[in-house]
Length: 119
Image (cartoon, rainbow, N blue to C red; front, top):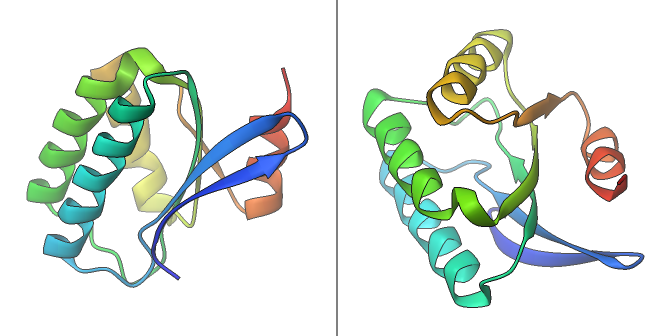
């Protein structure tokens, strides 16, 4: 189910941003909503981002994600991403280079949550 929610894993709070099933405009809207949540909370964030095969990373979406992420980079401590195809994993590598980050792709939600809860 797409949307934003906060997950408590032990002592750590994880912001879950689920883009599953969303089209371009909806993805942009959810990215804007996640930016608002992160900036309003104004503390370090551990983020779990979920995509699926129905999501298309169009140039418009990618430029928007880049802009949104630049505005909250100072607050993103770790980010795990689930649901990327092999091609989208390559796009993530470029995205990491552009933003000088190390957002990580995982094959399962459990792997991503394990990464996000480790120090």
